Image 1 (tube, one colour):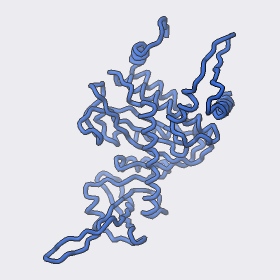
Image 2 (cartoon, rainbow, N blue to C red; image 1 turned 120 degrees about the vertical axis):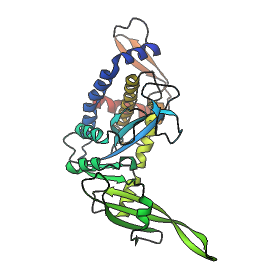
Image 3 (spheres, rainbow, N blue to C red; image 1 turned 180 degrees about the vertical axis):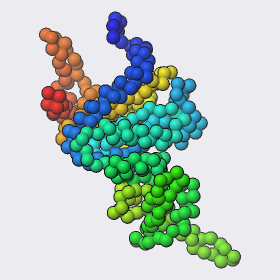
Image 4 (cartoon, rainbow, N blue to C red; image 1 turned 30 degrees about the horizontal axis):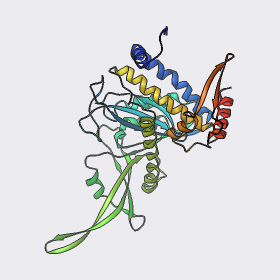
Amino acid sequence: MNLINRIDANTISTRIKQLGQAGAITLQEGVFPIVSRWIEKSNLKKLTIDMDSTVSGVYGSQEGSAKGYNPAKKGQRSYHNLLCFASDIKLVLNSWFRDGSAYTSNGACAFMKQTLAVLPKSIKKVFVRCDSGFFDGKLFDLLEQRGHDYLVKVKLKNLYTLLKTQQWEAVDEKTSQTSFDYQCNGWKKSRKLKAVRILVEYQYVKMFEAVTKVPVYDYYCYCSNIEAFSGVELHRLYKKRGESENWIEQAKNQLLASKTLTQSFHANDILWQLSILAYNISVMMRYETNLKFWHQEHKTFREWFIELPGKVIDSGRQIKLKMYENYYHKANWLEVDEKISLMTA
């Protein structure tokens, strides 16, 4: 890169801005084969994909930021990015850095097509799980055509009224379930919706001088092509997607995804992708330790194995790390180093 002086923040920022849109696309396309090899190495034949969006607020007028969906700080300018995880191994399969005005499901079909193309041939079956922002008939059509399963929370304006009119089957004292066919406007066909209602409490309502005991329910409704699963089973399966939200927070807060920003949209895209790549490298390093350190968050892993007390010595054409003799995690560090050396050999 013809650098003469020392590298500082301004130099890095300038060079990243010069890469522009072409650089952002090249980086993403360069990472896809790496992700594919990691998945293939896991020896999985089936894969669970959790797709989600995340809002990253900004405190300025960065290019591409806009006032849009932002439940935490309404009216704040932000970016609204798409991600999907290979949930079986916590890996980010794909991510799009998006304009803050983008609706959750904008480009969802194109994003899913690109994600499926990343998967190695060893993956024969995919199960896609999404929140109500991806309740989209075109996405369902795509997954059905490819022979994949999906589970998406239902989003309808009249959903509460629709569910109240259904016939419910009791599962236990507090839980009931139901299923019915429904076709939204623009859908090519109707699909089976399955719902669960859970008794929360009883309220006493006065009607015509009489006090009536009225049950209060929480309702949950899902669209899925997994016919064998009941509404209760789908509800249990859907709740497992909450783990992906924790992984998103790790990428954002522990790897500073969308925290380091410039005025350039494409430079911010590159910085976002680099943070996601760092997250994935951390995941795969832990995965290669035979799951010994699998449950540690990135912050913990970094504190144990990266930010360790030591000195780098460059002598005799060799670079060595001289570690503090009594470092508490020294044995674990040496074990991880050995496994990673075997992985990269």
